[in-house]
Image 1 (cartoon, rainbow, N blue to C red):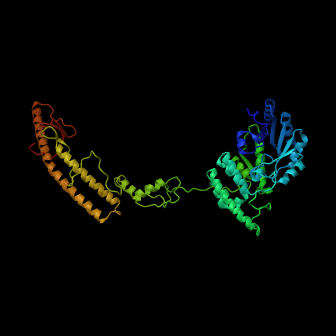
Image 2 (image 1 turned 135 degrees about the horizontal axis):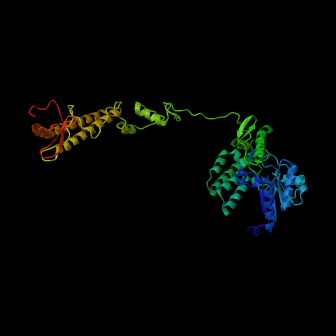
Length: 523
């Protein structure tokens, strides 16, 4: 596919990143020699260009030499040896071992390229002399100082301007540009936090131009001060901060590296088992560490897991939920709402508007509660002002429902009375917000409704008297029928439960009349 577009194919067998572990490639293949041998051998046979392999060393020099010979036998025509083990990355990077590289060079016949510890131009010659390698490779050293092999330390802002011109000519993601500029200007950005924050917040490639210009202005000012006073201007390499120079990670003491080394050794031992699964827990310094903690410890050996810091959450006083952090009653949101509606209190932590309480006031009233009497069901007969229940609808003499027109008028008056009662109930719930003027308006409305109620009762009184006459006539006819039945010897009592059924004269509607000792003797 690509063999006609390049001069060689390089197989990277040295990547130690977590993504290589998840994808099962890089340095995480170096324990599967048969698989690696088959890959390199197939590439060597099928390709017309040379095959190169980049590898990391094992802790043991002998094993590293055997590994290199296996790759040479499989068909690798060039080896790039990185003098660090797979676990040496991030804070555990440490120093590369040139002794491993020298041993590999003596054991194989193919060219060997040395990699590791090359930060300055002088390191190139020293590495070639100590390892006997055919060439030298540098990665991070060139990222911090692109002029490493040419020699010298150019100003970081000058290299940054040149890099932005190349990025404008060959577009790339903004994250790539940000990463390169951070490495070029690392020592300057460590001293000027505001410039570092601006570079971290840049959104496009064009946004980096003004930042590099600001770095240039600041570095030129520091260069003038450097001529008279070098205090705070020099890095650990005795170089001014505005020139390109390497960054060496701080050295970690051996006592800090020991737990991480033990964790890495336990992970390797577990990985070598047939199950290929890492142990659930590993004892490090008397503390049982899970797989997640082992990973964190390998990244940061200074972590201390001896003291478990678990935040405790306080529980609501009314249920098992977590209480609100600002609740005045130490309740959760649901229990606090119920308490506010029940006790008419306020909570600054669970704040509720007065409009919500006003809207919910009428719905939260229950019989026997503190909100007043419960509303009667719609089918129940309305109660009059004098304490007597309104009579049910009865047939009139024209065949319709007795008092039908009066019922409509009386229903309208009842609805108006209920509406007035609701307004008065709402006024009681928010009495703190009512003014003297609103009380007077409410009393005036109540008086108007009372007058309407009296008028409605007057209009319906005629209907009730007519209905009463019809009931009396029906009872008389029933009594006459009963007397005739007694004379014929048939049972006269056809009533059930102490009641009598009668038919009205014209309407034909059944009326159920209860027996009462108050019935007139005329009946």
